[in-house]
Amino acid sequence: MKYLAFDIGAREVKAALAERSNGYLGITKVQSFRVNLRKDEGHLIWPIDEIFAGIVEAIRISGPVDFISIDSFASDFVLLDEEDRIIGGAVSYMDERTRRVTDLPDEAWIFSRTGMCSRHNTTLYQLLSLKEEEPEVLNRAVSLMFLPDYLNFLLTGIKMTSRSMALTSALVNAESLTWDDEIIGKLGFNRALFSEITADGEIVGALKDEIAKEVGYEARIILSGHDTSLAYLSSPMDEETLMLSLGGFARMGALADSPMLSDSVMNAKLSNAVIYGGQHVLSRYLMGTYLIQALKERMKEGTSYDEIMRRARAIHTAKAVDIHAIDFEEKNVFESINLSLEKDGRSPAQDEFEAASIVYSSLVEYYVNEIKVFEDVLGRKISRIALVGGAVRDQYLALLLAMKSEREVVSGAYDAALIGNLILQMISQGEMNFEEKDEELRKAIGRTIYRLQ
View (cartoon, rainbow, N blue to C red):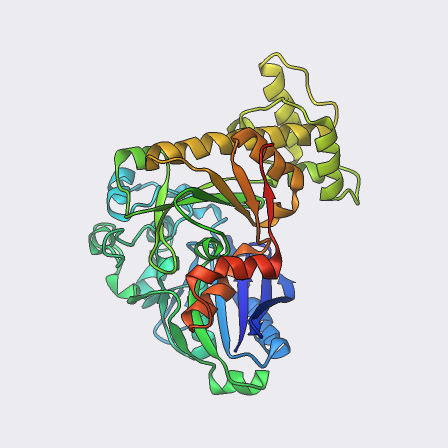
């Protein structure tokens, strides 16, 4: 059987194929296309029609395949009217509307029920914003669909809600894994908007006849959902391993035995989730290599990330600053780093490459501290870091992390969610099992291990 996966990111949509032949897993990246947010009626809107058209074209080019699955970032959704037309637009989590919410819910109460630490771009906050600023949109809506679920609906005509996507909403009960009616009712949302939640890996349905005719073949859609949930599947995970999905921003996560809803977990700003296969995880969003990207914007045109890595490694400064004290605006990053150094009575960075070296040291120090937070909350030792995402190509960062953390770093899948999407499809169809996936991925995409010598 042949599988096609789509991963919708904030800047592009990626597609890849997988097929198991003669006992060997072959993974091929098909293509990618840009995603450009647009401003419409005061909001940042995802170009959902363009995304769908790009996906249909990629299905045509990639085929024939047996199964297709789509995943995306968390929280974003569309509201549909009685005729299944989008109302209010596919507003991005990066839109400022959630920052203007005035009637804020009790965050401790939300956590006690959902296990989700408060983040102002969640579905919950987006709905609160609509309730305050555009109540007419909510009043007209008859259903809510997360972005990948809506794209599945366009392909199949079938509405289904992914569990991993729903769990990012801060509206799902951590114990029952169903919509939390008490939260929905107390916050004044229409319960009818929220359709029954379905576990990832289920078949949504076959391509609609007109889509099948357009792409030239028939295929079935598999429910997958949230990109970070899928990244875990691309990563070797056990009780001694912590996953670090690292790109411009990062997600750190570790396995848990059950939902953890204590004050210590909430105060540590950790969130609960359930990944494919029913495993519980604790996770946290973190700053990633965005600061390196921001410094790159100041450098001579054509400067590569490899050059930045090599020159930062050659400098190898022990200087570090508080990541949270840095201004994330691209034009201010360099000056903000130097301001932090000067406040501590240290000499400023002489150029962007020295600033990059400082960012490397600062990020690693930051991650080491976060690992200790996970260990304290979980009550166990973390001995291995599974590094996935864009940063797997940064050998200096991986080596520095191994040195400073005194833990083994296993560097694996670059397109972690995309690979995890393919793995979910294959496991759901019985063509692979959890026990063999790590070895299959090691052979298919490779793996580098960094250890403190």
